[in-house]
Image 1: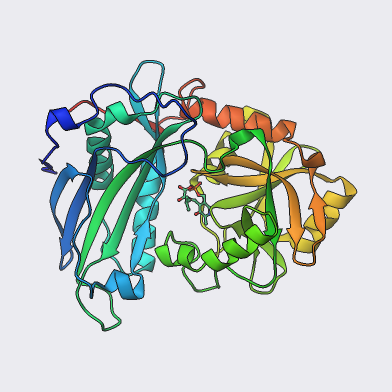
Image 2 (image 1 turned 120 degrees about the vertical axis):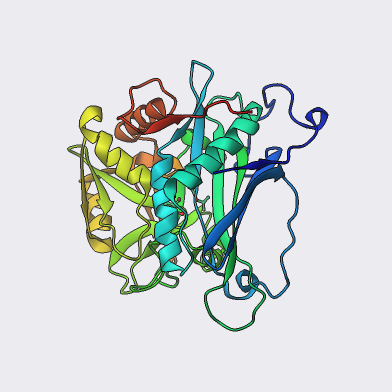
Length: 362
Ligand code: PLP
Ligand code: COI
C-alpha cells in the first residue's frame, strides 16, 4: 500500500516520549495523526496519514441517519527493548471484516489494515504513555458516507484509525472490583441481529441501559438473552465466572455475543496459567445459585479496554444484591490478569504471532 504521509510540521508534533503526570483516563487523549482511506464503489483508495482533525462528511451521509458503521478496539505495548508491539492485531483485522460482512460494508484485506495501523503507530510512537498499566489504544473504524436518505448499503465509506494513549477502562483499574446490574428490562442483542459484530449501533442501543445501571451504582449492565434465561455479556466486555476448582466459565459464543479476543486469548493461555476454561450457556438461576452456595468464587469481565475486570457485586432492579468473592479481587482473577498483561507487555513469552513489532519507516 502506498501511504501518502501528510504530517504535521515537526515543531507541532510530540517531540519526546509521553510521561503523563496523572493517571491516564481511557480514550480521552489523541495522538498527533490519524489514518484515512476512502472506498468508492467497492475499491479502497487514497490511503493517507494526516494530522488529527475534524473531517467533513455530507449531512445526508448514511452513517448519520442509519448508523452503518463498525469499529475495532486493539492495543499496542512498549516492551523492555523500547520497541512497540501490537497485540493480536490480525484478530482485530479479521473481526473488522466479519463486522463489515454483517453490516454490508466492503471488506479490507487484513494486511492492509495492519499496515495502516503500524504506519500510524510508527509516526506517533512518541505518544506511547510511559505509565504502569497504560497502553496505546487503537481504534480502527469504517463508516458510510454516501449522501442518500434511502435505506441501503452505502456506495462510499471511510476507513479510519485514531489512537488514544490510555489508562484502564474502569478508573480504579485492577484495584477494585466493579458492580454490574442484572436487569430483564433491556437487551443488548437479538438472535439474527448484529450482536456478534462490533457495530456502532449496538453501543448506541446500550446507552439507555447503561444510564439505568448507573442509578444502581453499577458500571454496566450484564445482559441476559431475550428470554431472560441465560447470561450473555456486559456492554463492553464478555463475562466470566470461576468455580471453586479454578475452572473459568465463559458464556458460549452465540450470535448475540461478541467473540472477545481477550476471552479467546485467555482460553488459549489457560494451560500455561494452570487453570481450566470452558464455554457453555450459563443459566442466570444456576449462576445466582452457584454464587450463593460458594460453588462460584470469582466473576468478572474480559475485554481489550476492560482487560480483566473482576466483579464484586451484582445488583438487581428490586434493589437486592449478590456479592461474589467477598467483593474482593480473587486469586484466580489476579493470576489471569498478571499472566495476560505479562504476555502483552513482553514479560512472559507470547504464543507465536501474537505480538508484531512496529517497524520504523519514517
Ligand atoms: N463484548 C463487547 C460488547 C465489547 O464491546 C467488547 C470490547 O471489545 C468485548 C466483548 C471484548 O472483546 P475484545 O476482548 O475483543 O476486546
Ligand atoms: C474495547 O474493549 O476495545 C472496546 O471496544 C470496548 C469499548 C466499548 C470501549
